[in-house]
Image (cartoon, rainbow, N blue to C red; front, side):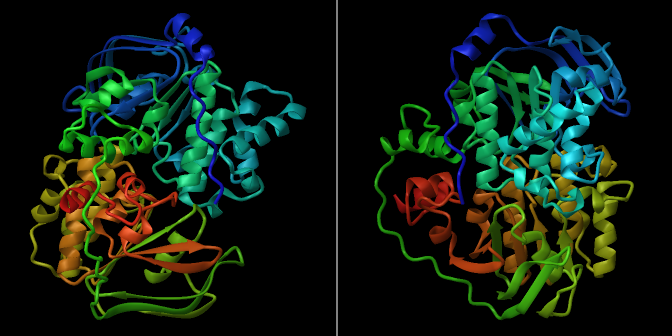
Length: 531
């Protein structure tokens, strides 16, 4: 794996952008969605200038709504009632048509699959150029440049339907970059990306900011983003609760990244946002006992399995077993076959050859797109449908409470925020007691509290005997719940062992704590236990 170079430091160009005045000014904005019970944004006053602005806050707190003010989708697409003013790139974002705003504001949604128009990568990335009337002779070079910036130029002739979720995310970012916007706005851009892809996106953002193009990013994965962010806005309950320097802002976060959390709990005199900073303060740890593998009975097995996409082998002759009560984490680059393997275990992808052995009982499968599962009139109804099919006497409130969904239990699932919708889909498939639970990128759009709640649910199910397989790029989730980490690469599987072995040291998949302590521990709680 070739990692993108370290992001450039913000240069004089971004300083001049700040001096030239803000590129976006939001004054006294209060906004309510058409069916909203209360305001989604309340009394928002924001100035966005140069550099990288990081927008943080809990799921459902208003981050995506705030970002959609910047390109006029709120209120011009979503409707509802608004008061106040928003000026972006010299335009009144409330009265200017969204197609005109799109020329100045590049925007990438949380669910990139919803914004594709064409079926092939090359045509999709060129679509915005066609709308702008760019000469056809100039388009190929612009498309190639945009794809290269996010390290997916090899995908230009692929059909979008054949891409992994992370590959689609990078194509969507390239489609925004190709327009060379005055302002780039990204909503959860690294939520499905492998470390290489995330590094490429952050490098491109830092490059743009250094050259004078401001970037606004909403994210929950802050580990690698904080060092390139110049400003942080925190929003909760539709209100700005903090704004200012990113390093100062992270000190006040209720759920900071692991390094900051570790330093806070150990009383470090300053917030450390890089491994180099933390190494000057981190204490040595007592030798830890080796982590024991799970020893449960075999619950499922794949033997000599070959899986293909478009007649091209993705996984070639692989074999793997999972135990009852074991949590196996699948990791690997975007397009390495994680989703294909999960779908084969779920019985949704026919193998070219080999055998899949499953136990009797329900197989619960969470796809990358939670919207594919949600059709009932309320979150509670989604869970109750699963419980009826499972003939389970568990109350719906059990898993809704575990995942922090009781306050939206009566809501229509498709009206929820992306992170809430993700949790609703998780609740719907994990209700009852499935024999096997297969989760594809389950923390997409989830904040730290939601991820921890998911971890508690996974551990409960494992304790009850459910065999769990999770495909994820979220190293913190893998560290919290995994018994074994399996790496997919070049069509093969590699058993990396326990999270302490797999998620520490110099590997790009290591957690922040794992990078600080090669060989483990890999979580804040693990580090504290070793002191």
